[in-house]
Picture 1 (cartoon, helix red, strand yellow):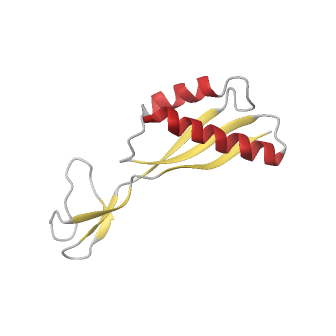
Picture 2: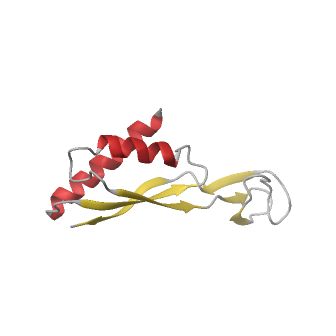
Length: 113
């Protein structure tokens, strides 16, 4: 599963930032995740708990903020949020859409002590 590779990257980022800041413990890792990202939050949290054992990230909480799906219509130029169950342009009803946001996944911030 690709969640393990993502979790390892998250852990590396948190450990590096914690070390740079002289942190004794990372309490919270805040991530931004697009609604269309292929990451399963439950699995990600479980993998993180296992991967973080014995590090300053052990026991850290993972907070997830979702990024909505937004698109641009190639026919009329409309930009906005779309419903994942009915992906059509909010301006003209067309389906010639380009994804603008919703696939992102990144560590936004950390809380350390």
